Length: 369
Image 1: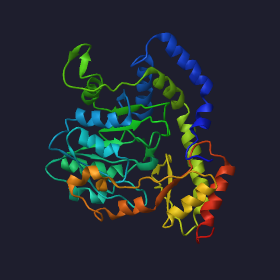
Image 2 (image 1 turned 120 degrees about the horizontal axis):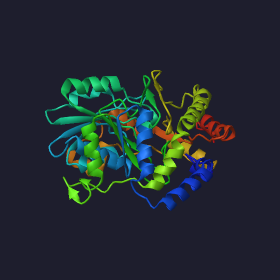
Image 3 (image 1 turned 90 degrees about the horizontal axis):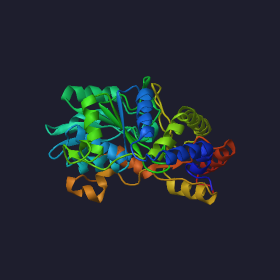
Image 4 (image 1 turned 135 degrees about the vertical axis):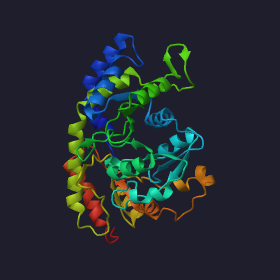
């Protein structure tokens, strides 16, 4: 089977380095928010060019704590995309605010800036653009809208560690940013993990307080917080992977380049748009096809894994029925849900494996078997 991402193959390349670091952590007796976490925060902040990086338990918590740190809660509205993983909107709901959706760009799948302002109301407090599948959203336009209306911009960069927008790293372009270190992310650990990045020292202090039960001094609590701390073992693993991420991202781009070249004349497939002023690190490589199910079945027959991201837009999820959105409200996002599918993408995908994938994709243009 050719998986969407071969995690076993990827982690085998750093297995011995990780085992040595895990032994050091075991011998240290410090297992949560210890020196490895501090080192990871420092190196992440330096790499992204931000003042602070705050490690948390997972990417969802990163979003929740960031929203809380900026005082966003009941009665507030946050504009975001309907075409992303549920956690983005879920975090807004978890703090008591209301997610407000705006349609996306057909080529990049990112939040369309032209659709934002019509959704701004007196209750709007923030915008959360998602750098979907590893390509940064149109941040200049989004930041300009936010500045005009006095809004906070929180980058959901959970799929985009190492991507750049006009020479600036994803995670350094808004008021704050959130990352996930879930194993399948391009920078992922052996479990859950997350990070908040920002250059506002007071907001960073609030995130640090919130992640440890609302305390800045042990056993003395300033507010109701969370238990959202990163383990030392995960930090140790991520420090090793942080040294590899640029090279691995470049390998992802090479894999994407081969797909693009081989499939560019395939009229039955729609390839993602990669804008020239930013670097796409291809957390996933998603393409569109009207005969998606037929193609995916052909891939499966050849033992090639594919997946649908995302089969149901957020505004049509049962949990958000009270918001009274309906099918047809966001036609671009909905059409992507009906046609997009992901094909294997990872830094260690071989040329032979890619050739197998490409041959199936090309063969399904006219419905051939």
